[in-house]
Length: 434
Image 1 (cartoon, one colour):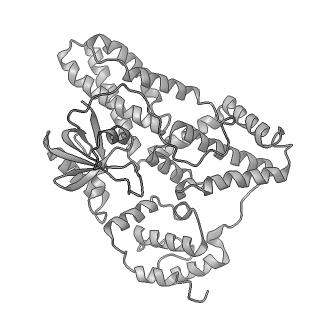
Image 2 (cartoon, rainbow, N blue to C red):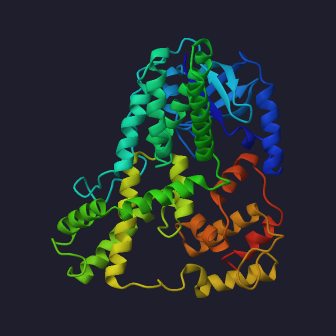
Image 3 (cartoon, helix red, strand yellow):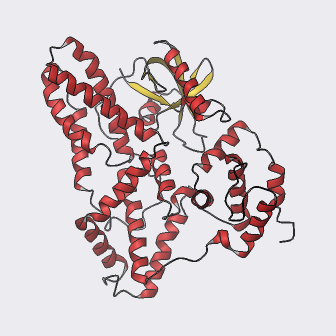
């Protein structure tokens, strides 16, 4: 039997409600569902946030989505209409639901390759960095856990391996690790149920319960943005790579040989380094997602990386570019990059209009009366008139808020304009004299 995880249930409720209320409603709904309740899984290739998305329906109402790390396992089960029937299996006592597809067979646990999401790396095969020692160890351990059969004779070995896995399980937010975490959590759940009929020692029972609790908490952390775990792990991962002299030496040495005529950063031609800086930044600018374009806004970048499910190799390509941009800028002695597009002469005209209309204060910060959805429309309008590519990250960083792109997606779903939409549109009417 294959279990698939259903998430995002609370986001199916009106966004006008507070997150706390939506969470309470989702929990009441999930825990009230009976095992065996019919479910329909439907592919959403038109989904602008994730073309691999699988929606989950009960009684012809969409109630959530299959976890993004598990959609690869669902797609082969869909019929010609990109649908399949499933059944409610269980819940976690909170807001996560688990469903099964009748007749689906468990396959060997092999990490399937996935299509690349990011543009082709600007570094090439030669300049790619080796994985950290902790990450390489984590890959090996996770694979061994999943391929160890659930038998009483294997319990002690599994607990031993798990004791090594737990300290490492927050090493990365790459797709591979998210998949392993979900599968390991489900394996531990199955082991907990089966072990009730086994003669485990008290120590083994306590250890199993403690490990299961920690893995469940970790999986929850990686799906919950309120405590900023994805951002923390992403930035810690980057810092761990940056602090590893062996990895950075390999990166910088290979890069200089390949792109700087074999000269070190301090000796390389300045114009060549400036051209390289432009090339690396252009790779980021060409990202189809604004959150991945700004190397200075790692929080927004981390959230998008976590949501998209980048492979380990893609994350290392991204890390490599970030480290090289920083290294080249240091070598060129670059300080502040100027006032930026939001402080340009043209931008200041729009800021003054926004201040006059009561959307921002004299420091261009949002007033308390300005809603998130209004902020999203202001950011989008600003980006259009100033021709900004990284519209969300620039304004999220400026205002200290998050997930404006999500507000855009929700506004499309609800097909509802915010209060004073006409005023915002008039402020950015380019036909008016600037």
